[in-house]
Length: 212
Image (cartoon, rainbow, N blue to C red; front, side, top):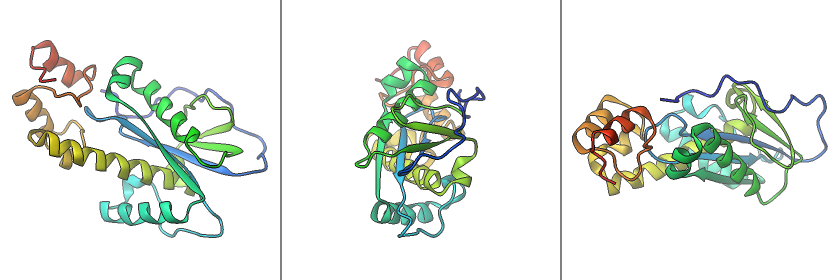
C-alpha cells in the first residue's frame, strides 16, 4: 500500500535563482489511505499579514489545524484546492493522481504565481517554474499552510463519507488502514469510496465482497 512520498528524484531541477513575483506553496493530503480522494492545496501567503503557528499539518492537533485553516483562508493572498477522485487514483495510480490534484490546485489560484514550491521530491507539470523541497511542509511557511488546507479539507470530506457509510469509521481513521478499518472491510466489503487497487481493498474485491 503506497503510504510515503516517492523516493524518485525530482522531474525538474532546483532553481538557482528566484523569479520576481508571487510564490505559492503546494502540498497534498491522503496519499496513503485506502479510501477517499487525494487532496492538494496551493497557497500564496501575504507577507503583510503573518500567520503565527504555521507548521507541518501532521504535528498539529485537529483543533490547531482548524484554527489555522480559518486564518489561512482569511489572511492569504489566495488559496485553492484540487483533488483527484478514487476513480482517477485507480486509473492513473496514486502518484500520478497526486500530481494531478496538485496541478488542479495551482491552476485554481486566483493569482498566478511566478514560482511554485512543492513538498516532496516529485513535481506536477505546470506552466510556471517550480521546485520540489523534501520536508517542505516543515521548512517553508507557504507549504505548511498548503498542508493544513489540504488536510482539513480532506478530513471534512471523510466526515461526510462517514455520514454516508458509518459502518467503516471514516470520521476516526480518515480512510487509513487501521485495525478498525480493516475489520470493517472484512465484515462489510469495500464501498464506492474505497481505492480498489490498494492491496487490502483489492483482496476483498477479489473475494467478491465489493459493496459498490
